[in-house]
Amino acid sequence: MLKESENKVSLSRRSFLTGAAVLGAGAAMAGLAGCSSGGDAAKPAADDVAAEPAAKSAATEDAAVLGQQPWEIAPEPITDDQIVETIDCDIAVCGAGIAGLPGVALAAENGANVHVLEKAGTYSTARLCTCGFNAKCQTDNGITYDRDKFITDVWKITNGSQGRMSSYGKWFDNSAPYIDWLQGVCQSVGCDIVPQQVTGFKVTNDGVGQVGANEFWATYAAMIYFVDKDGKTLADGVNVDWTGILADYATDKGATIHYNTPAVQLVRDESGRVTSVIGENEVGEYIKINATKGILLACGDMGGNREMMGYYNTSLLKTRSVAETKNTGDGQMMGMWIGADMDDFAAGDLFPFVAVDQTGERPTSPDAKSYAAVANLPVFMVDNTGRRLMPEDLPFQACSVPKITATADGSAWSVWDSAWQEKFPEGFPAGDYLSENSPEQIEIDIKNGVTIQADTIDELADKMGVDPDIFKEQLDRYHGFCEAGKDLDFYKNPLWLTTIDTPPFYASRHVVSITSTRGGLRNDERCRVLDKEGMPIPGLYVAGNTAGSFYGNVYPPNVMGSGIGHGQCFAWLAVKDMLGMEYI
Image (cartoon, rainbow, N blue to C red; front, side):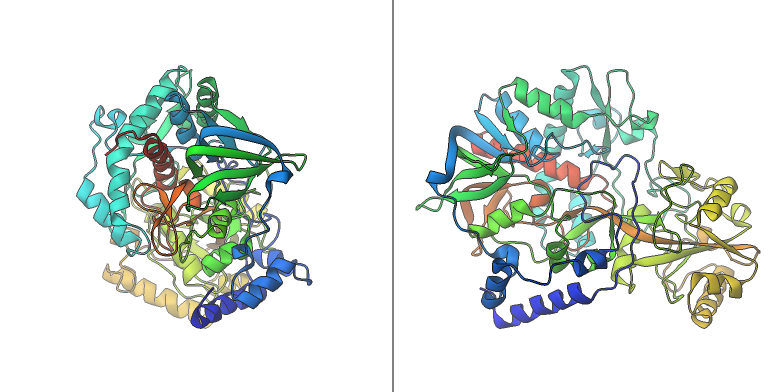
């Protein structure tokens, strides 16, 4: 039960959920269709909350009486007489997704009898990459990373909040063996993996090796792409179905995946060990899987449960989802129901430049890009009042953070003028796989309503809807920094201190989109779930977005691919721990 002070906090969070007026915009972002994300992409986040039925459920009523949240209240236990099938095995995994599948494949490869409960009708859609450090595919190409610097940088980036510094080291040390193993799996079917640096392809303006990069954030571009049987990668427009490779590899080795059968309850025996997990099949029947060596929760995030997500991070309610998701915090809830502890707050995997039109929606025109031209470059960025918001040259995802933490509505405006090309430093990013920075694309964006054009600053401020006095005062101050060659407010790189004084003028509003949340059940360096006293719960492991103890309230976007990379590696290590295999 929560303490009185904690209960007050939860009530204030609930008040926020009820009264939030949230701006949003949907986006079907190329290459991200399979990501975990929350809510309905066609509605503002506030509408999702307002649409809740007035009548509270019994669980909600009980939660209010106990000072808990509805998802913390355990349902009635499913009894043995309700079970239609019982399966005995070595290892049970909840989730045939990006994190769970490597663990499943490793278990099956080592002769374990492994069963998987998967909520969806198939395995998870592949994301763009994985991530690791000093794997053979990297060192063979002269790419290396410093362990000490990485660990301390990530600790600083996340404010040392919730994440265990020792877990960062655990991932760094074991990521190379994991990636080497993954490469072997891919090569066994005629595919391969390749470091991002070898292809030279950038999925985003990440600041790595780019002109005028902001040194404020130490960036780790340790992404590793997948190569199909024809030698093509994401650089060729091919998003390899590597989750399918892992699923097929696991089943070929003897793993059994029960699709359309979500895990619904864990069973803990009198000794305190978690011995079983119960799933519900598509016809509503319960099956019970007894696992002698351990159960791994890799059920994904809580982005599809906006109330739960907002409770653990109210700022995330200012984001927009990129796609519908079935990830509703199931794994986190099952853990809490049997006594597991939960992170205090969650982070989001955020993308910062989803352009919106004046209705708050993104156009569906076939010539529209996910990001408006020039808006994602280091121009002049302000909030909805006209106040400057950030050092605009932060790399890509880093711009998301101030937009949801330092604004009322989660949106920002990028502003530039018609002389942008001649003012920008030579070699500026021409675009990425989600945007195209060209005069032609600007005209398309104006036609589609994602960019506005004006002949004067006053007219521009009026079209933007910002306070004209605040906007002009902030712009004058910025121009003073441009003249002096030093940004005393945000310390933007002087190469990008470009004036906005040549009409016509342009502006584009953008919001933050979310693919998934990061944060969940507390765990130790062996991926064992911890109870509220900080002790491991025997038999229960967690990895991926169901797991906590790694991020704070900010997902470090400058460690690119960390969510996928560490989630996969830790699931792989969890299975090693269950099987008594050695690891670093």
